[in-house]
Picture 1: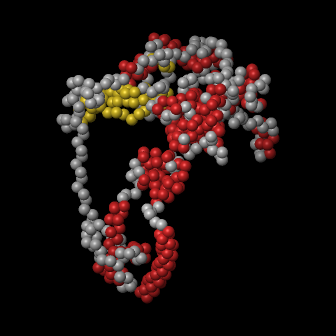
Picture 2: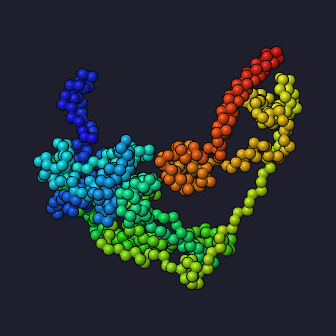
Picture 3: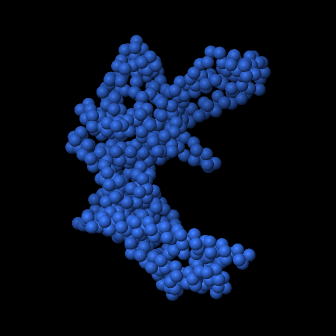
Amino acid sequence: DRMVKVPKLGEYLKHWGINIMDLTKTDKSMAEMELDLNQNAELWAITEKGAKLEPVSGPGFTGLVNLGNSCYMNSTLQMLLSSPSSPLLLKYGDATTSSALIQSAPQDNPAEDPLTQLAKLANGMSSGDYSVAPAAAADGDGDGAGAGDAAVASEFGALVKPRMFKTLVGRGHAEFSSGRQQDAEEYLQHLLEFIGRAEHQAASSGRLSSCVPAELDKPISSWYQHGLQSRLECGTSHTVRYKAEPAATVLSLSIPLDAATNKEQIEVYEEAQRLKRAKIEEEEGKEGKDASEAKTAAAAEGDEEVVVPLVPLSACLDQWAAAEVMNDFKSTLQGQSTTAQKSTRFTSFPPFLLIKAQRYYVDETWTPKKLEVRLDVPQTLDLEYLRAPAGAAADGSPYQDGEVPMPDDPEPAAAAPIAPEVVEADEGVVAQLVSMGFGENGCRRAAVATNNNAEAAMEWIFAHMEDADFNEPLPPPGATPAADAAAAGAGAGADPANVMMLTAMGFSDEHAQGALKATGNDVERAADWLFSHSDDLDGAIAALDAPAGGGGGGGGGGVMSAATSDRTMFLIGIGVAVAAAAAFVVFRKRA
């Protein structure tokens, strides 16, 4: 994870014809680029510029080592474990709970157990065993600190490297399994889903309830999910419709720059920067050493703290709660386009409300940019005014007094069924096939199936000549074939989209199809079915496919049927070979 120094690099390169002594430097080294970044980085915003900070250590003050572009993971974990009442800290950081989870881990491969890795990480972050004072770490003190780790600890006071946790959570994900930089919110959503699946599987086996206190034995997402309700009011008829939105984990807020509280300071700072740039451009026209010194002095003059907009968090919440005007809204009552107003309110608040500030945006040239802005977050935040009011009706509906419910959208008229195109067998093609020695009914079926293509019909005959209904007359136009009727009676197969959703959760195609078969193609019930049978999925799938009943006599019948089937397949193989030879002779004769 660190740079490697090669003392004799010049000699090695010279052996291959590269003489670095004759080269001219054009690019900056890694150290120079890091130095430039450190000089230009506005670290004062997070390190309290002008204040003397002293490092701290102990329980609750444990840092995480960057594993290479893993700051998105580190910041997410620190946020989830920062509060003393955090569910991850209470469920997995407790010494007793974490020890019980680690001891109950699968003995064959505990590194692949999500709860074991989560317990290790949470307990290591909360216990303080891996958080040592920089001076002590520099002297080599600290539990389990090696020479390389001591160097890291002397600078950051951190010794936790969640490498196994990162590998396990990112496995199977195209982005989080890589070493590239990622979005912290996307990782948060993925991490909560990952923990939720692991907890569901552990709850089905009873492991979680035996290790975690009963008051904490609930889905991890319930600690962060909040309920939302949208209100839509037609601008013409003033009818109202309420809709319960899906539960969300993160509240995304846009930042209104016009609500900044330091507009005067921003104007003064921007004017000073304009004068500074003008002075530098003026000095660029001069020549000689004096010009260079004057330019440097002009650049250093007025060097002051950068002023960025300071926006209160309450302004972001007010903008989120404001009514949104929707144009080209089609009124269901009047059947014409009009305007409507849509607003959103909370129906429930979680113990922890996760808020995302939308700092990134796309300008008029479709270029992604980041807002340079600071949010003023109060110590206490009251959101009760954003709660959806209770309905006035006794039936529990959200409608208030005087509000008229908006009619539902009319059901679209069912499209008239399109009659299937009827294909008649071409007598010339049928006669050509019959002359080759095949039955007339089979030749007619082949002509209809291939739209009267003689060459394709021949291939169709060889592929279907052993079908049970090959030599039977064609059914009348519009009739349902027997095979289709049997398939319809057996029910449709598993929806490929549902199968894909279940396989994305780590299950195989066979298990996903079996679960959908057992639950009537309901993907949510199928997921629950898979988790509840996770101990022996193969046996559960086999039980679904096993025929009902059957005793000792049935077993003997099965053996006889298998033998008969083998003999039948042997005879069919001979028949296909004979038919192919006959067809070859016919073609040879015709040639």
